[in-house]
Amino acid sequence: MYYTRALMTPMIFIMIWPLVVGAYLALPHLIKHIRQQGRWYYDWVKLLAVGLPALYIALFKAFYFFFHLTHWMPSRIQVLLVNSYFSQTVAGLVFGYVLISSLEKRM
Image 1: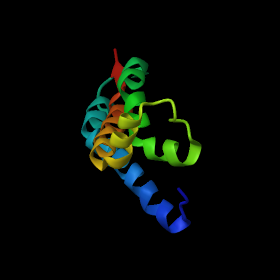
Image 2 (image 1 turned 180 degrees about the horizontal axis):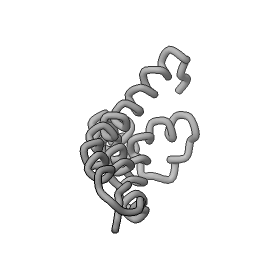
Image 3 (image 1 turned 90 degrees about the vertical axis):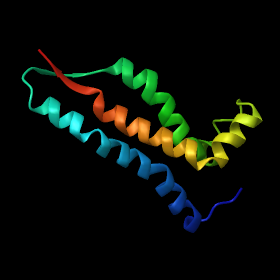
Image 4 (image 1 turned 30 degrees about the horizontal axis):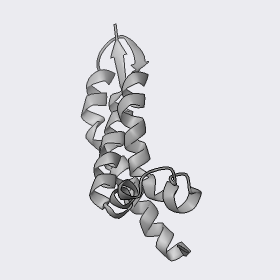
């Protein structure tokens, strides 16, 4: 498919806004840890196990149309992920939340 600049802008916004909203949802968690004493720690396991697959689903449309990195997947899964804004929105919210909530302080 050929996409013009006028079509790419809403597509990018639809992919990015859930990431920002998910990060905002994690702000109370971050503020709670800012007030604690200790050293900062980033939970890489949580980010890689939950966040990376969520990021892939959230940005799947960009990977599919711009980079052609998804041709190895079965076609039914591609259709589900490309045509479903719900799955991309939920995955974006999860990634934004995990990105911020993985940052914490430990004694």
